[in-house]
Image (cartoon, rainbow, N blue to C red):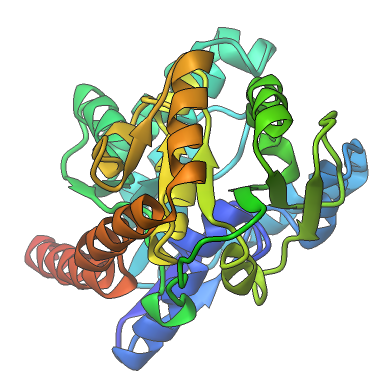
Length: 359
């Protein structure tokens, strides 16, 4: 029985860790793997971040100490899987040591290298701008959520790169039954930290609300945006998100065209489409891959394009239904847990065989 140690950044409440690590745990166990999971940060840390509070200094130090303690046990495992990096803000020396002693597989669903090379981390960015490139270079394998991240891994000199888009469990989602409705509900789902992406679109939605009967639905925290039209907020829960999505008629994913956003994996769109919802999204990064303009949704960049796309879908429920059908088909064919897990199993077997040969 292979023993795998997963080192995600967050506990299950953190979206990236939940989708890239935790939702696959039942599959690993069913495949006969002995799995251990040790996140870096804690639920209390996430609660502070989502509440716009600074986490306690000693609490963060404890997170570093716990990760150090876990690394002392890596000899017990056949494979180590790291989400993004071992220690945020610090040099990649621990990854280098691990690569010499045991080896590791590292996973990315965000352009975290831009935290360093674009100066977000202050002193750390000045001293170690290429940290994530080194982590990729020393890894036995790098898995990435989209082509933008894949290109960076290859430029960094990664030995093996596989593409694993962020995916859904199809058993958790039901299809929307579209019909003529009044008002039409336009929705957005996301963490409190990403609500900022919706701000630029609020004037567009307010203009639409003056002519059409619409409601803005947010599946989020409890924070209400500065929006003058009708708004409904449903606090996010893992258990309730799929059911809450069915209250939407149209799903949105606005993004600015910046380096960090190019690394995003279009998960909102994949969730909307899993529910058979039509979508409108900014033509940024992976959004352009998931949305076929005029087939399963619209790509919109300017305010005029957003108004035109949303207006057309608001006025025509049969178009919403047609787009929703195409989107649902795309997700079921390309973005499900089972498809990713097959690739993961192949990777684990390949790495295991390589280790046996080297041994």
